[in-house]
Length: 71
Image (cartoon, rainbow, N blue to C red; front, side, top):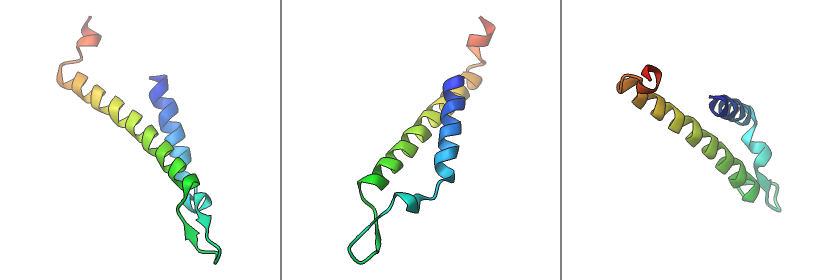
């Protein structure tokens, strides 16, 4: 459970950040999405996947009648 809580906190923190802070600029000053942005995006997607997997596992356990609680 602590992994889920930690992942949710990190995901929330990252989602509150301004994604433009991770954009780079070309020679004319225009924003472009480079390595820094895609690293940021990959981190958010990883955290999202951890949370989604835990949620899916929890829903399956509920549908199955919470067998781990009955033991």
